[in-house]
Amino acid sequence: MKKAAVVVGLLMVWLVVKPGLWSQDKDRAALAKAVMEARVSLEQGLSASAHEGKPISAKFEIEDGKLQLSVYTAKGDKLSEVVVDYNTGKAVKTEAITSGEDLSTAKTQNEAMAKAKESLPATLAKVLKSNPGFRAVSIFPALKDGHPVSEITLTKGDEWKTVSEKLD
Image 1 (cartoon, helix red, strand yellow):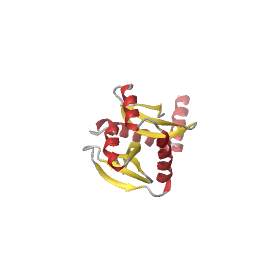
Image 2: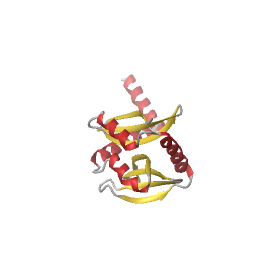
Image 3: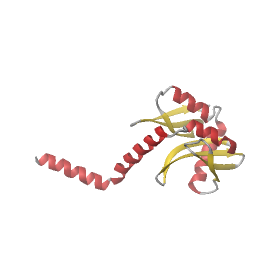
Image 4: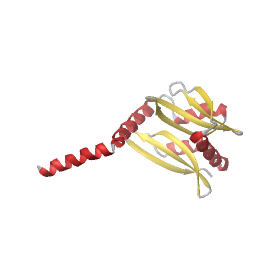
């Protein structure tokens, strides 16, 4: 009985010290459910944003309690964030990325895509074909040892995985 009380006590302390872990799991579960129910896939979001420039990354996220499909694009020196309606597949908002963490992230992603020989939509299609039943949550390019790669996060119910795919 004492051992059970100690275990419960330690668990309570751990939840108090690390409360973000509980909400992180809840947020991740909510995101997975929303992505699986969305009418528009990440792949379709990449296509819908192409009129604003070359897609350089894309992600589903919960923003202010609502699902959002966001795609970063590059056209010349102009970097933009395109928000795509996950029900209709239409771009509903485009904002220039001009400062802060978003700008440094977009510049890094654009540098990786400048060296890429394969597009994000083609890479994503290949990864999804080899992972039946999964839906893409995000795709982010980066340079790894000077070579462009993409990190693709996938979900299927409670199952999550990240796949690394070369872009050159």
